[in-house]
Image (cartoon, rainbow, N blue to C red; front, side, top):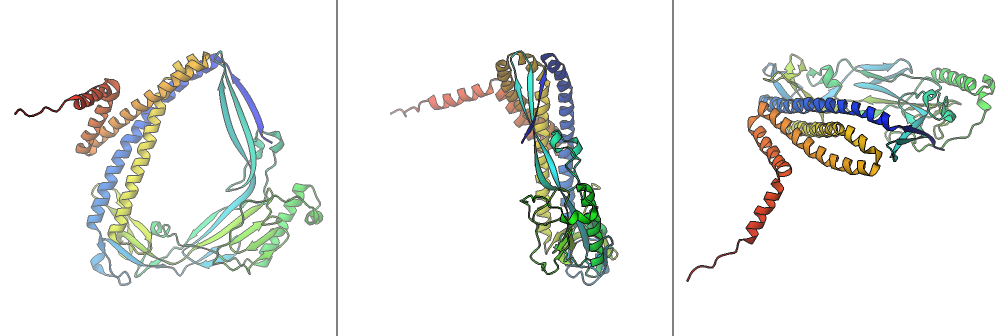
Length: 443
């Protein structure tokens, strides 16, 4: 069942708190202004850097053969990324000839969810009802249930073991006659599941540790831990085994199970209990990749554009110069608009907060406050949008004057329409155009 808390905030307290909202409003507006200005500069500098890089980039037709003519040049080359390195997860004794070897860990835990509902009362009071619900989920780290609001769930979380996540990378990855830099190696994403073959002694040792922990947690003697029964909890998140992994490596002990690329601590992989641990192993395998980077002897380094911004990238598969730079420019445009929208929302929220004091004063009569809030919302949206356009325009005037002036004209037009009866004048002009009769030609 859900657990609820109810809190009543008096009118005087709410009015006092509204002053803090005014301060936070100014902070939001200042922060959003900085974000909008910085974002426009970032977008322009990135676009200039990409244009500079694309102009300097040349095709390397055969990376399998090292040539002095490419030394110091920004090249686009496609080849197989391979390695002779063997990576070893020493904790579990897993060794793979691979570019990367990763270990990810999940824990089955109770998770607290919180939902608030606020209601204004006549006289200015506010009643806040907070509802807490709890679900069993796989999470990336153990959750401290001691801080849960519902006493019935406090202390319910525990885990049979804590295992660190780990990422191992090969030191030497060949790219034809060259070797990749560390940053390029980490960009390779050709991951596959690791077929586990963990030593039986290691599995038996883990099983004993988990069994002892289980017994202590349940208050049982260690020798009876295996016979204690507990209702199973159905799991909507099934263990996923990659299609490329054979399941003949399945190992089932009492408290440890190995199947495919998953090592599981708990009584059953298909009916998880609180405390269960799921460890998944993956490797990064050799693959064909396309690199755009500056040749530096037998390796690569980032290209430095005229504006001092650096650039290099790695794409999976074969890509042309135009394809890569089209993708980079699209990504730059996407992030520019994402950050613009975030900045505009922050400005609108900041302006909205400046009116919070008056809105709170009107909370004595919730109906009046709602009407005022609706009007403030519209005004805040218009002012926030206009202010943001002006900031963006000024930034573009600083970085790109022509487009900046166009944006200023658009912002000025919006001010005229919404603040100086411009909309009414536009309607009048439209009506005059419709009312003008066509004159017949004189005979």
